[in-house]
Image (tube, rainbow, N blue to C red):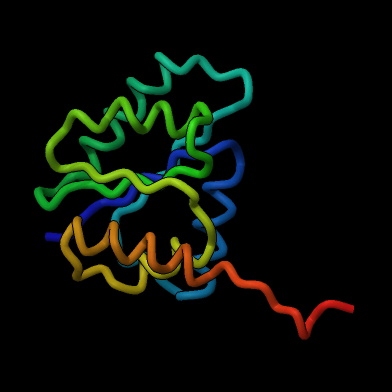
Length: 132
């Protein structure tokens, strides 16, 4: 068994990031779903959908939820799922983070969450030699 991944993000960010990641890796090794959150979203209705998606993704090893912006509606929806024991939530979704997660499908939920955070951080850097 492996963990599932649920992207909860402002639309269409999650779909675009997943599409780019899968094209880059030529595979999506983890069961992954995207919950797109419109700006005029009904958080209660989307929280019900998120819980259903999370349940479908959980094959027994848990679900890693990646969300884009801490404090925004997508992360607030994700936080409603924190009551489940087999869920971890990481905010600050970026492409480096997602590719890192998909590159290590054999990790445990805790290890995967740590790898996501590391990948996100390591993907952010100042490139002073590129400034023109």
